[in-house]
Amino acid sequence: MKNHQYLTSGVLEAYLLGLVSEQEKEELERLLATDEEVLAQLNELETDMEAYFLNNAVPPPPGIREKIELRINETEIKKWQQPTSGDSSKKSSESRSNDPHYVNVEVDNTHIRVHKHWKIAFIAVFILSKIFLITGLYFYFKANSLEQEVIRLKAEAQHAVPLRR
Image (tube, rainbow, N blue to C red; front, top):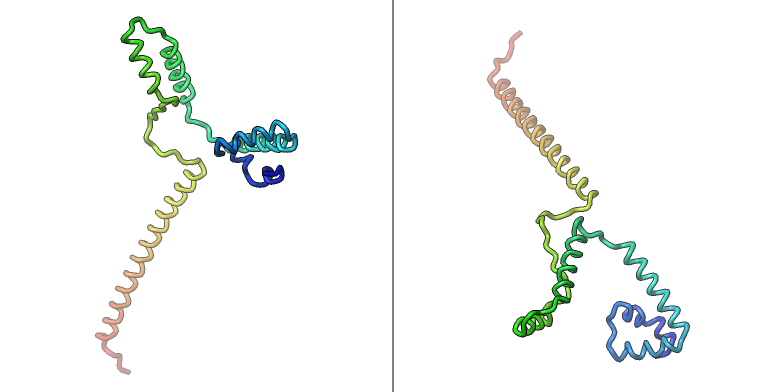
């Protein structure tokens, strides 16, 4: 690939995100060692992506940092402990090899978290629906009573005796 193609094809973005194949990665790393323009573009792109990710980061729930640090400390202690017997060393090495390299996070609450502006919107919609319900019921019953009054007046008018002069 020519240098211009690297700058416009999206390979640099894929490289920063770790989405390129091994062959493309090796080729790009050779090019970065020789071409200052591509290296400068890669550094600028990395800075822009980092700024974007930092600006759009979602803060973790409170208290999760302490849980992760505690879990990491526990795994580091287990990792560096020396086994006392030959059988346990075999088991511990097997468990280390099967141990995933991520931290399980346990969530205590089961509530859905909603942004504070959505909470206000949900409350406003709930209150407005109650107001419209009450208003609708009021006008329904008022129209029903007026209809009954019209029927009563028509019946009275039919049974009324005409006045003579």
